Image (tube, rainbow, N blue to C red):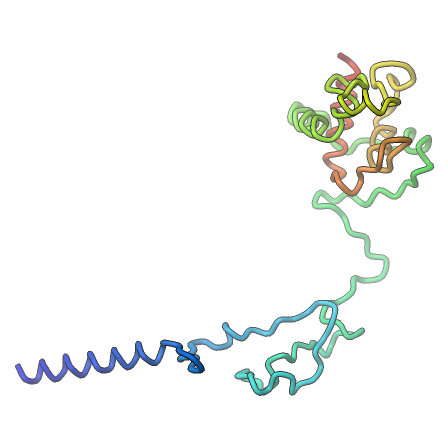
Length: 208
């Protein structure tokens, strides 16, 4: 019985000591388990901290370097990131290249630019949602230029009449991307895929 009591007392004392050592109070940080997880090295992409002694007073790194040293000495230009290879061109998630036809080349775009996606029911449904958000306030729900904003500012294209009835999908895409007249460019606001969805929906509106 006495042995059990002694063991119980010993275990209680050890448990209390373990819990006490984990607690932090005032200047006492307590015990840190896996300190490398708490003091991970933050790499800034466009700059480097090259002083290997920086933050040495705080460091508990296994390599003995300062806490704030974060340089990849193999990278040039004083940066941690690597620059893309020369002439690298970023594509979209679906592999589309950036649209590079200049703003003043609408006639050329109208002739050569073709949609890379088919006007399926899903594409048209998504195009309607996008059109309602971005286009309907000026061009109207029916595409006749009678949107609430269009009635105030005037001069908004009526897709169902005049020269606009026969405009090509390339024409519409170019204008959405680069802007024309009172319409500002939306290339930075709407992805290429979504612009094409709007184009297909506008072409559908012209048939109603």
